[in-house]
Image (cartoon, rainbow, N blue to C red; front, side):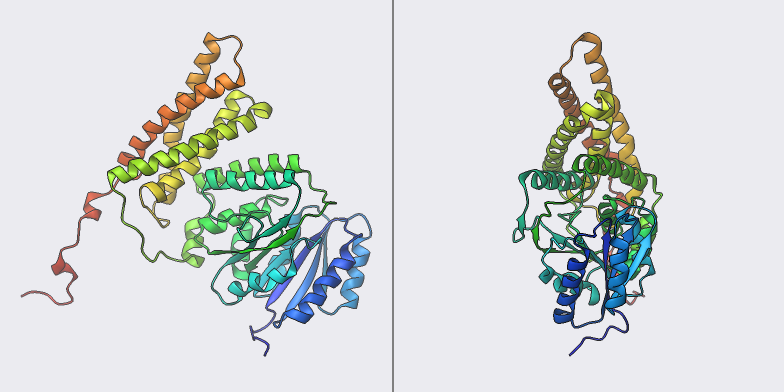
Length: 411
């Protein structure tokens, strides 16, 4: 029996740019699978973003020959542009996208979209980094992928494991609400969408996938990595400034808390803060070494400290001090930024003094100096976070008298 979802249930967008060699084969393979395995209504849309080869001719012909295939063209290059255009124009309950090379096993498609059609989740993504995922790709791309997702976790404290797998689905109303705030239109598009969704309290469902690397991929890994780092800094800054109405989105689409653990004891806070601080210091060192070459010492110090400070504040808010939900989220991030400014001043001064007293400074000595200064700054952060940023309002924390909770009153 075919499930009924009241209209078009799923629209799969396949973004393409100069894919004349594989487009027809991939679309026919996708359509064959959907026809045989998917019971609900679906449509495939080829989203052409400024192809200059025969992609347009092939796409238009496929749309004419196959009833459930649509072709859209934009005269601007960028995967984000193509997805934004097709998703916002869709009337389907769930919108999805697949890479045209179909690197991901299509058998993962039903479990990808099922949680969205049922309303259980808001966004669904395939992950190549799950314990049961099966992935075939070279060691270079494997290393870069894992480092990138580790950077995301340590700086922005995200919980999803694989930001850039080309296998995602979104409930239409979620896409329509979030896409106006996604600025990137190239490879960082996926990451930015997921960060905003998670910060808005939306539920992200992950499924492990089988994935085979496309050896003919034209992605410029180095340029993409630099663009992603710039994107992370931009998104973190936007959230700190409050230019994205995440609390409004949370109120409209998010899922409210169902209760959480009590605030940890002072000893527990010290231990947890130490763990967060150790991870933050390690993340700072890695980021500084990556950025020191192209940016210079002071700029790399600032960028690395800013990213780790944002992640540190978010981690301490939830893990160390047991605070959940959106209440005072951005006020606390702003206060954390003030603490960051003090910490950055301390580390910048230490770096300036080092260069003043030593003529020839090696990167390793710079890193050692900054690491020591960062440890001192971390101790200062704990004191300020506990007594200022995440302080407990004693009046609000005071237990409610039992008489006040009774339905009747004493006379």
